[in-house]
Length: 259
Figure 1 (spheres, rainbow, N blue to C red):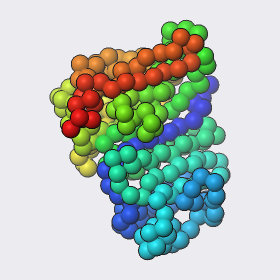
Figure 2: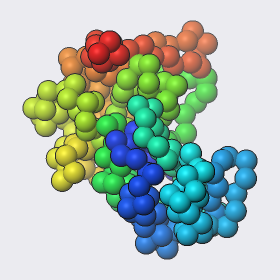
Figure 3: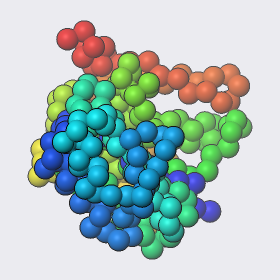
Figure 4: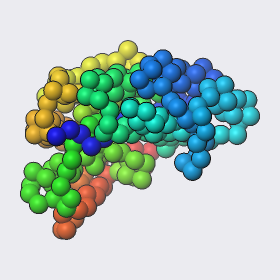
């Protein structure tokens, strides 16, 4: 069994309407031929052949683009987008199809680190999504579904509720990092790194690419339990039909929303 898909989701603290920042994020994709984009667009409904100069012209010179979508339709297949202008809800997300060869899985996390170094996310998650039963039938399957939902911090869930949880690799900086006690994070039962751009990174395992879903889930539960006292992660609730996972804000996020 292999993951269904791989996802990178981040809340940038920089704006892409600056040519230097936009150029750097495009460089990250262009510099690795395994993930070089084949198409781009400024919306989900249309795509054209990838053209760096055209993107920069539309975004920087003409100021006519509010979001940039990038695609690749080769063996490493992905789609993703980022918003050009910085706001409290600015969001970047890339989803990689399960067809990505296993030998290239390390490239996924390397790409995530390179993106994080540029966008300096207040909160970001790079995660491998293993197949999960839907609806869930056992307690283990329910926890697996919860982990997957935590690793998909789309704006409609994150903005009102705060960080949903950790994923295979999680990034914190800015106001979200400030909600945690730094020593609490550094001493967590995970692999923790302080990053040169000022953020922190938490890996559930030292070698997540070599772990099966049970090992990953066990580590996730351990880390989530450890972080509970910080009262930052959103509080989950679960539907009776074995399908829905819902979230509400914890103490720290409620205070943030009031400020």
